[in-house]
Image 1 (tube, rainbow, N blue to C red):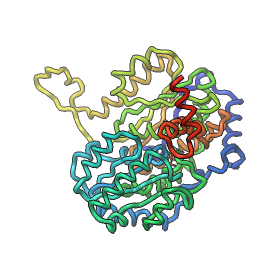
Image 2: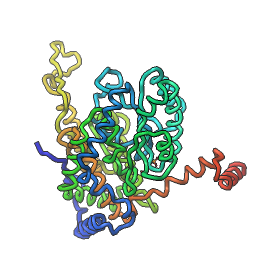
Image 3: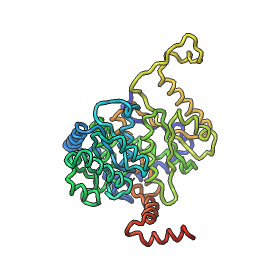
Length: 439
Ligand code: PA5
């Protein structure tokens, strides 16, 4: 078995690769590594894996052990980059039905990633009367969604279990000095972890933002970091393959990249990837639109469009080698369902044939295909995948000619929302938006 993820561009690049593109990619990689490009004050993630030391890991594991010992539930509060990485890794590694099973250690649940009143009500209802802890994550410390959720669950926990329990079982992950959450954590005496200044939200999964919830969920953060170190040290060939292929396709009119998985446990990895690439590249009216599908489920809904719709898409398939468990299709004497032709085969064998058949059909239908092979869904290979996607994103963004490390466009909706909510400081915007609505 290969011990690393691989990018295979055989069915993506026919006739598209050029020396000029390779040169652009090498220049972009050089810009990234030398720290000479736009957004270079946000490159802390680049050598992050190899800089994580034993003491940091032990410290995170110690905090996780306290939460695991004292709590039935741990609510991880955060949004965007302060949410998706942990969610993606925990989902990828967990039993699919963990929420319905009693298991070892607390259940890690998520809040502050939406403003759904019923969602919050249902979650509060679930943890009422149970011992729970909170990991509240916000780099700015001022984001509205997690701030609302934290206010609700902090009050509930203090009333339910008392101030002492709440203080022991609330951990804040935020900026070293700035922001409302930092001030609140200092005042309340919570344990805290720092999100480094030079690591942006969507690149922060290998900081305590991701590592703490992942450790609380019972997964091996050392193996995750070790996998990322492997890519940091040996991943450049794969990084360049991916960055070159997607830019070649984009220049050739393929404006949408669909990240495809055939493993339900990878659904949220695609959500994390969409934020990473969407927020990094979608600027100055440029950038591939990152989309995702879960196959074979979505072959029965989106399959028609992908096979036959507008030819502006390409696919990147995440192909997993080994499954964790074996399920064999039984023989049935009567064979009323006509399935005996696959009796004795593993379910995953059928899935692999579906994957190959789908790829070939889509290639025939004019959808270029990139393949990323992952030996198995383990901490180590997920660590590799995270770092690989991060570095490829930096290189790809510079190839495209954007600053991959800012996100000016996410402020526009906030300004309108605050104006509509009459937030102090937004009086002028409030008057303007109300005039516009009434005109
Ligand atoms: O990647 C980003 O920068 C964003 O998605 C942020 O992570 C997200 O908006 C949450 O911000 P914060 O961590 O400041 O609450």
